[in-house]
Length: 507
Image 1 (cartoon, rainbow, N blue to C red):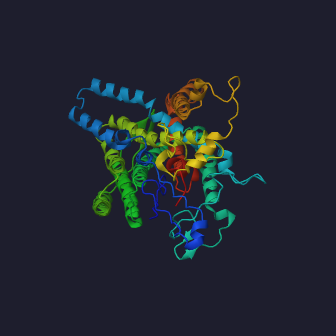
Image 2: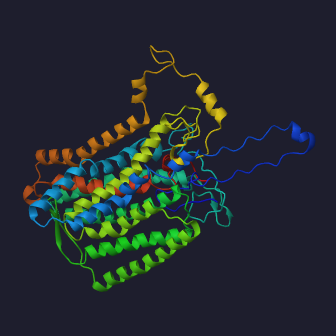
């Protein structure tokens, strides 16, 4: 059974339910005696297959993807601080945690997006370059026809699609998205902020806050949908195409209804000294949006019951992530301003759970021998058939043995054996730790160091813009740009994402 998903960060997964390989029937007579014995198709090691069902393990997945937010928000509901001093202490604690969770989650998206940006955005700009593995390489065909506009542009619903032109291939479209999000969007934001400063208009500058909060809600909801599809794919649970579309529609409806509810009353808000204004929403429009969400939720619940009847299982952690992001997180912020600092913490944890698994797989792939395909290697307990993320069928043992016998480059002063501490420094977990540390430094620089320094050194009119103008500009710039960056990184046609989250292409 071929399974595919329609989501930004989801892709077909083959590990959770490996398909049996076709085998030739034995020949008769002398042909049978002369023919070599068929090599049985390798099967994933049970422990590797079980590991492939999780990002970090069942308990951590539950806590990071959404379950932890229900525990903490439940505790806050039971013991909500009544006095102002306690609420200020809670707000201060969340701002402190933001240094280690919220801000690095933005920085990690920049690290992934701009790594090798020239090759991603201009993959065919240099004549004679070979296609880059994992980005320019042609996509494998899927086993079943895919509807037009879905899948990876390989086939159409009525048969083979016409030969794509260079401008319409998935690779060229993805490269165009990289150029748009990586070059045009930041240029447009810089031009907008420069214009507001030149005009001396704080009201015009406040529009950036409206755009930011508009996109933040959308980003939260779509990430919840993405985690659901990711968790379902890793566990081999297949949503029907119509059920996926209904889930996506429910995601959009819930986000729109929440945005209308936030703007229900015309009011002035303030962020880092800059005032922005919400919009008045007619009651009829708000009630209609809420009614659509209620109906859509019932339809989605029916689809989940159908999945349970068919599979006798549900992607529980993915569902927790979806309910938290689409329903709970978008609404609790209206209850108290302090919760606007609590909710982003859990959204960022959810994001980091995916990014850290992605980056750990990148580090592991970078350390494989040149002749070993990505996604294969030994497990920490020495199993030859371990495949990171439970992605592909393992390499045959004879190939792995040949890989082990191949000569390694000599280490200076120790022959072919590497000094243990040097090997440790080159390990994938240490590489991930460097990635996380760099994200923490970049996050602090982007959200605090650079804006505060510019505020102190620049000579803008503080009577108009207040004393924290560039804090406002820096935070809104990063939040808005982050939406466009994520819309490229986690697309299913991004082969890098498919490889390092799932370890393989479409099957």
